[in-house]
Image (tube, helix red, strand yellow):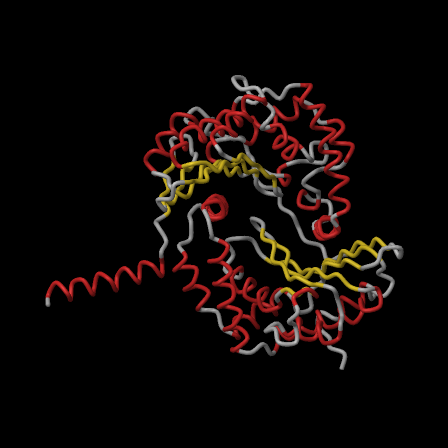
Length: 454
């Protein structure tokens, strides 16, 4: 009986553990300030990467585009590996090597078999510390980046978001694009790239993150060996403050079939206590696309109205966070003749969040947000991304149970208070491209932030 009881309590524990099912995130800081963070889930594969506290926000007018240019150069050969050697080595391991640049972070990561972790870390160390940055390769990548810029111009959502940043963060580092202006891409030279590395790639600004089948002790040993010599000091690299300005950019083109519009208010940075309520509010507004089929029956009130009135092709709410600021808003794609109505209903829904959102809606949005958070952590790469990003944003990884508990504390009153604080009677940033003749004047949009036409 005793042993059966014991077995039962063990199985109850096992269930509780399965519900959490989150191995601990272990964190160790090297002497030079580099942080090593990992979660071991015992898989036969792993993702390991470098999350660096440096993106386009750390650039100025003249070198804007350098962080992204550097990311392109990373896989073009080091002092001990040619580009071909690097590509063959990765391919023979059955691994993937990738990188991306955002406004505040640069990331280099590899997916590999767990047994190849040492080689993956050594390759990452090699590419960020010993890249040759050869003149021939620089010229070739210059052409590649200029072509990439032309491709981005055909992705209207990216175009609109770049315009939104340009108007909302007017004349600040967040207002500039990640790729940089054409004239910079044409003039960036080897010296600019070397200077960017020596200024920003310092121990305290780098996190070596790993997830999947990884031993923290092994990772720590590898980190000391390969990154122990990175410098630990950096001179006065304070983040330049970026103030939000309610304003607009309109690029009217009546030959385009659809209007692409983003409207947003200033929100908050990653670690601000209002971030989670704003994420719940964002989930409440939701996303909708014509191809969904559903709509009238969706939980999002805006989706019901949109679907019913055939007001747009798609919309998605967004909550983009930076260190000390953020953009909370909505991106929509509409027929030219529904733009004014769609804008009206979006603003009406925003005001409703401030004044009369209900407990049941908030409860549903909270559940959806929790589910989305869990679903996003499916696989070693998203988990590794989560570790790297959170270490840079919070200097720790917030355990899921803690996040869930914080979401649980939010109720309808919280949402009303927080939304009133950031939405009600605030001047929004607006970016619009296409046949936008019917988009109301900025003054009218501004007045819709507090006034409801009957």
